[in-house]
Amino acid sequence: MPMTVVLTRRRLLALSATIGAMPLAGCATSSGQPVVAPLPFDRPRPSRPVGPPSPQELASMYAAVVDDGLTIPAAPYTKIDPQFYRQRVMDPTGETPGTVVVDTPKRFLYVVEPGGTAMRYGVGIGREGFAWQGDGIIQWRQKWPRWKPPNEMVARQPELKKYSIENDGMAGGLDNPLGARALYIFSGGQDTLYRLHGNPDWRSIGKAVSSGCVRLLNQDVIDLYSRVPFKARIVVRQ
Image (cartoon, rainbow, N blue to C red; front, side, top):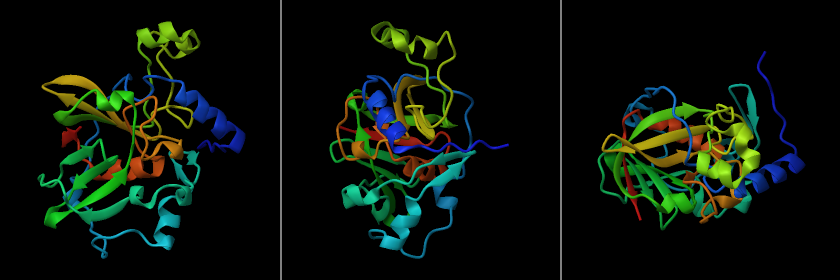
């Protein structure tokens, strides 16, 4: 039977503190088999072309959701700067439809659409989020990804040994630092160790945080995953 996980306030606070202490939480991890997704411009387009979501839309977008048997808590969107809500905007990037663009300084991620629009998401940027820029492709896409901290990280934090590569990492789930989805970026055929991934800590959206790469609210990364195809081009701007 599907397992439902209830995330209490105490557990969420403890989880947020744990994730904040993980220097490479979002980036150093394993990749599984690639998953092919529909091209974003094949998806039905909403009738409202651009503009911020209405209060009713926000309540629906960021409500609690059950995904693969796991209950993702509602995101307290009223505590987040409204510019970082998921919304359709006029495309400021000039890139071709289907391209993902990360504007690191402004803390925005765009999926470019036909017709001059883009879906925009607010993101949090960790130290590793500033470590790479340029063009790449989304080589892997994973639901509830497994996290494997590198040996260097385990050496600094021995308590993570149970999640080491040798021990097959941490299974996907609400406690996993990569959240509900992860998209793995390659450039020139090599893993950049740069990730777009979910995140249970809403406080990091729009911020430069201590760890990870590019993190989105879990509700937003699920939406992003549905729009971005396997082998999509990605441009990261610093």
